[in-house]
Length: 356
Image (cartoon, rainbow, N blue to C red; front, top):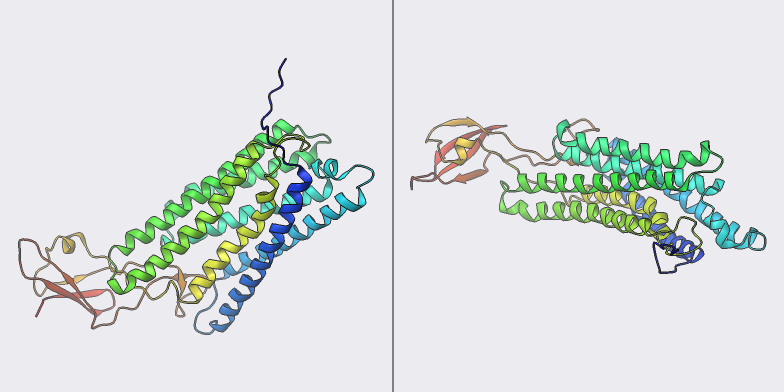
């Protein structure tokens, strides 16, 4: 009878936890510096641009969770290599994922994951001008992540001896739903920015590219880490004593990464890397060149709500630019007819005139 082994690579669990603690501590330091700078930018512009309460509160909560998670990781290493070094042994102690301190870490991890996923869903919601249908699927996926995550850890609280196979199924669902959430939301956000940017002026193209780069790279950072984590999770042994235990490295780093990403977005917005962009959308007739000389058409100014505008509700963010009255937008007409320019007579109303 042959025994199937999921992995032939040996990576000890104590090595994995030592490396994960070092990397997580480094990321926590980065998170601390970025969070401090983010709040500095918030304070420095609070009079002209009230802070977004949702994202700001989320960063505070995520930082507290990341700090608690890092502290518990260090405490667990002390218990493994000092307190229980002679009786249980470091490997067996760390392999006991039902231990109280590990259950606390897992609860923090799941909570941090859900909050982080909700932040990126909120970001997508704002970028889509609060279009509810755009985020229905991501919201359902976040609830699925919470249900499966707390369901997995719940086995250790409700049952005296958890069924490893059952916990693994719940955990797999949690990883998959969270990964899908990040992929879908990143694509939706990037698509929305690209779609609106098609109508922007050349002056704003670089700033749109900057925003698109921030969105894609920040979303990709979390997505790639989650994909890497899930891949290692599928190859991890059930008992933690043999095989490949490298999954604990990204697992312990996720609370830090989950908090760093929205913090980077806040810094990018507050430093005007993504603000003051002109986005104009014209009626379909206007795009086909159907407007005639002297026509006055109400032309909607398309907006990507992302950065904060001082004249609006602090909870509502905006990513747009006031279009000066002298600004004109050339629109080529079909059938080789003369070009016209569209100038704004009043907010939201443009006047069509021939090019002088």
